[in-house]
Amino acid sequence: MSDLLGEKVACKKIAGNSCTAVRMRLEPKDKDLGGFSVRRLLPTKELRSVGPFIFFDHLGPALFAPGKGIDVRSHPHIGLATVTYVFAGEVLHRDSLGNVQHIRPNEINWMTAGKGIAHSERTPPETRKQGHTLHALQLWLALPKEDEQTEPTFSHYGSEDLPLIEEGNRSIRVMIGEAYGIKSAVKTFSPTLYVEAQLKAGQRIVVPEHIEERAVYVVTGEVSAKESLIPQHTMAVLDETQGIELVAKEDTTLVIIGGSPLGKRIMWWNLVSTQDDLMEKAKQDWRDGRFPKVPGETEYIPLPE
Image (cartoon, rainbow, N blue to C red; front, side):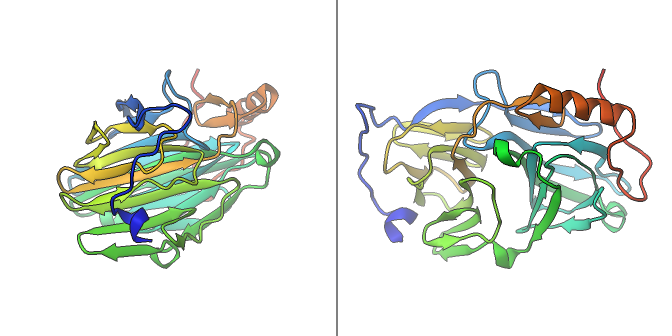
């Protein structure tokens, strides 16, 4: 286990590749979501996905004054799974299946949209009363074609379901998938990896090699990968080089994502599909009010025109 966690591993060239490790860098684009903004890394014109990951948003750290917070009104999804992870703060999830779930640090909300689900995300009333900080990642994963019309479901995973390795001046949490000898309890539809690491300056970690496509996002701090620097708020898409060491140049929090690619997807607004007819049906259903509704909520985000 220690080799994978960060002891010196030689860079091995594959199929003539050099040991540069980084094949593409993605810089975030700020997106206004109504009262707060996020850094969006995926999708981009240059890259539509990393493994099954088709969407990557980084929110915050955002400081809200008393009485303020986020209010993402009810909106629809099809053909994907959403994964919400909070570094600091709290979000209240409600969905059309009737689930009401708080998401707090070191927990995961996994929502499988399948053939159709609606949900809202808000600051809980008790948190809104006082000044607070929210810092979170929200990712979307494409579902395999044979599962994109599955029944919608929702699962909440506590910190005990997301195994943690603490070793000296670094900690590693396997949030989805299996790596470093430990396995997350989160159930997936296809091979998927999602790891969070916190490294003190000078500490290192080796990127898992059993994953088909891999990328690193630096939440805070800066790391090097071979001769490449990866600064804060940058996603580095990695090549097939083995033994890629990430070395913290300062105290750093990062995530590693990846998995098996699932092929081309149609993405429009909050909807994802392999088929045009499913996409058009979902649009019309939301426009006409036929989509399942979130119990107790009347506000919703209209279909963009």
